[in-house]
Length: 341
Image (tube, one colour):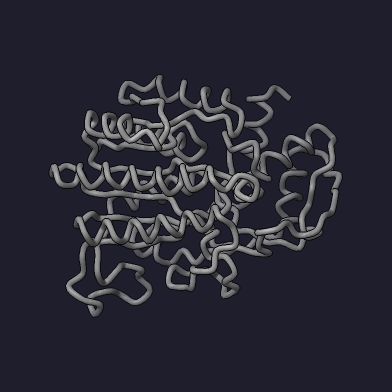
């Protein structure tokens, strides 16, 4: 039975991943601070569902609390660590950048230290860490492939995630620690974060309130349904990178490092969807039109994201495929049920 330690277990993605693993029969230990960046009752509701599984246990503490993190990890003795916890929100990073350094850099370092010790003890076989499509930053060559330039981040959030990738590579090299970094592309679905556009749009459209549409709707995103995303993570769990003998042993298109058991993998739907089409999917699911408040592009934002997920398919045989009409229909149905609207 696989033992998986998940940071951010009460978060949107962590909750869905933990539930998937528990339903497969894995043992899961969650680690989450239940911070108030967004509605804590939503996090508590997710946590309560997970606590209903016999194979689930958790710790409530901050990533920066190394003593609590180390004790939780040592006590659980995981086979796999999936690091999802982070200070979230691209736009919030413009207002409070220090929170991102403390959580996303110091916190990730603490997780890697725990993974190093677990690996030295002979139990840990795979460290998996969340990055983001935001690391592609000013790159305009699309669809984004893992080998593309990703050293021009446009926000401190993206910069901290790029730092995590570099830190992860050094730990993989120094400590023979198989590490997979995954870059997420605009994740949405039931139990989603209320500060993200899919939930904000849903709430306002159902309430008959205007929605803020940046760049007058001339934006494109690779919207990825959360069930597809966590399925990709689950399958990558069984594909830890090895240390290649040399660069010649790395297949074309593989991001595997020539110097470490480390790779980065895009997890996206491989479809560039216009923002106005995404809004139309919400309108159809909600059964009412949106009232649009067209606005200029926001600082740090990019006009488009689009994933090349060929490497994910090559490693796992899997492709995310839920279209936005289906995904938002499920999301709006969940929203109506959960919030009673």
